[in-house]
Length: 219
Ligand code: DX5
Ligand code: ZN
View 1 (tube, protein in one colour):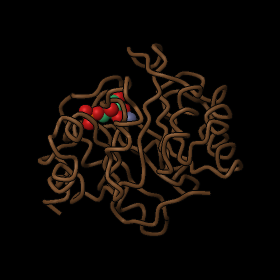
View 2: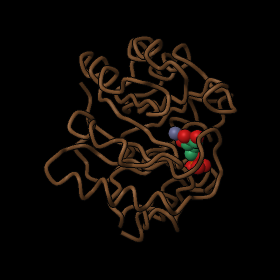
View 3: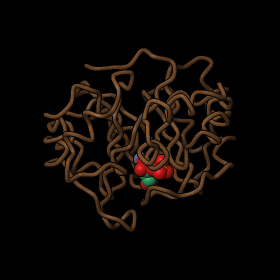
View 4: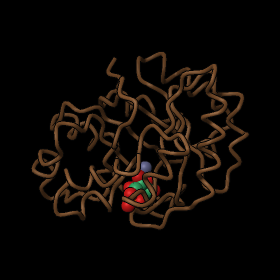
């Protein structure tokens, strides 16, 4: 099983790269980046459609970096095996999409993949409490899921602080996704985030390396 030991990870979201030259886009991502974020949208849970396991499998062939796959789909239980077969290392599903988060976490972990739960901006962080001892990571949405390039929702910082407090006896990583740029990154890191997902900020920058420096500056 692939797993990161680094404390802080910048996790580029491929939603903002040019898929017509995916290989080149991925090759431009510097070696200091260990994890790539894949946004899976079904047109039901969110108002956008991206790609499924078939494309994830192709991406798997293009990189040795770990793949963090963020499912924004209804009925995640129907599809997790397909994404695992496609070669993901980290797999997260939305709390809002299932009645039985614990059984999903178990099925993911049983297959030697790291399991995460995601919550939307309008979901109370307390709903996660029963699952904190089982998950490998929590993903806090700091925008409404569906699109890259939206503005950061500051309320998400309180959720990060709560999870950091709760973690004292537990081991999960805290990931944040949406609207992360050189200004919001330091707020997220100071609140306790371990992994920063970043799409439009990172890939619209003329130098990815400089953009990463910008993200880590405030720390
Ligand atoms: C939004 C996705 C994000 C998105 C982030 O639904 O989950 O991963 O790609 O993009 P930025 O960094 O542009 O907010
Ligand atoms: Zn995402």
